[in-house]
Length: 264
Image 1 (spheres, rainbow, N blue to C red):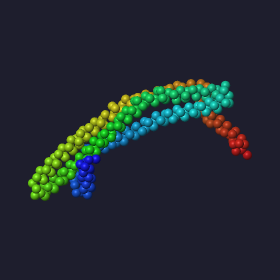
Image 2 (image 1 turned 180 degrees about the horizontal axis):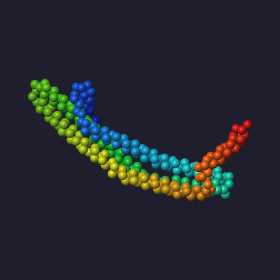
Image 3 (image 1 turned 90 degrees about the horizontal axis):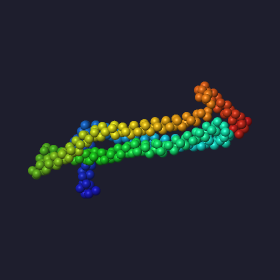
Image 4 (image 1 turned 135 degrees about the vertical axis):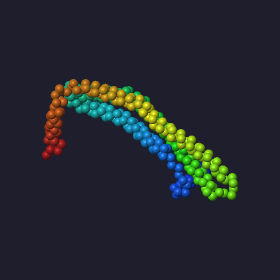
């Protein structure tokens, strides 16, 4: 930081302190404050959306990977018992189906999702530091303007013996006000425009996300439906009637009766 920049920082810190103690009037622009508040909400929502969108892709990867591991274990269980049984064939068919789904994540969801959802979100979030820099600059120029106005008013209320001081203070006030007004008006005009652009900006990403989810769900249903043909037609009805629960409970009871499972 240059000496002039350091001096400005010190002066602005002093102005802020004097404003807190009520010795320098603080300019309050309600219109800017409203627009800034809306922008901050938008910024927070976009950052959360980016985080959750990445979390969704990570969760889909984790789900299909976990399915593949479950299928691998079931294939081993049933294959070890009786490779010719319907259960073994169903387990093997399930393994093939979830392996295809796990592979399909990278091919049909991962790359397109990154391109159409994560990358646009990243680009939008990349603008926020730039906008915040403009807001910070505006706030610094506001401190300069408030300080210049305070100095000018003091000279008006209590004229100096030096006749050049008031015109100089007036000029500093006018220059500071001009710079502040330019930055302030720009932000008041453009912050709402930025927020208005969020819907057309995110529309393609939202549509792409829905299409990819539908495609993945449809393929998952198609592949897993093929596994059902290895089960008896009445399995669903038995489950609804609670008979499968009773069957599981019966097997658990047989396990409890084994000595190694705690039977006396």
